[in-house]
Image (cartoon, rainbow, N blue to C red; front, top):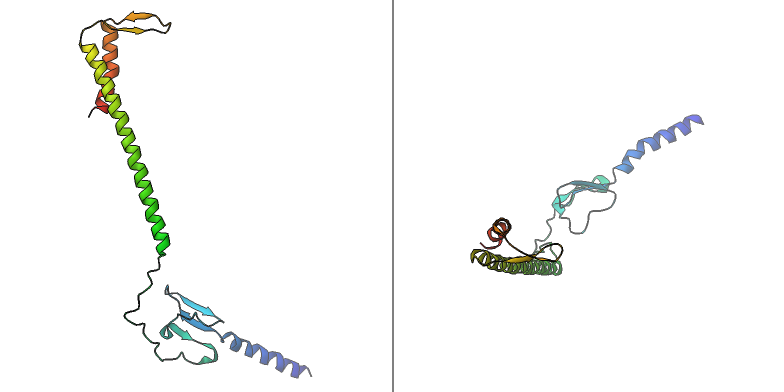
Amino acid sequence: MTTTKLAWVLGLALALPLAASAQWQWIDQSGRRVFSDQPPPAGTPARNILSQPGGQPPPLAATPAPAASAPRPSGQDKGLEEKKQQGEAAEAAKKKAEEERQAAARAENCARARKAKEALDSGVRLARSNEQGEREYMDEAARAAEYKRLQPILDRDCR
């Protein structure tokens, strides 16, 4: 009786690899070899099916070629592309508005700096308020300091 049991176990052990060979084998769209107990997806061409269950070779019948007039899918979502373009256009408009705002600020700074420089160049006595709010007249040292403060503004904003 143990010989019979041993024969059954040995027979099952030898039959196990046969069950494992009941697999599909094909090459997917990205070129990778796929092993599965399920058949390949419907869109897989017959030439990409390498093996199928039962040890039968894959069918050699050619699948009908797609019609030349049928449009090929591009793999891109048109709605997504439109949203992307709208987002890029909005970003460009926002950037342009920011550049225009900065240009206007530079032009205003330039005009103020030029006016201050003209006043310094005119030779007229100029006064300014100090920290206590008192009026004090600018001497030559104060005029030189004001020139020194205005020059970088003129260089940066008046191009």
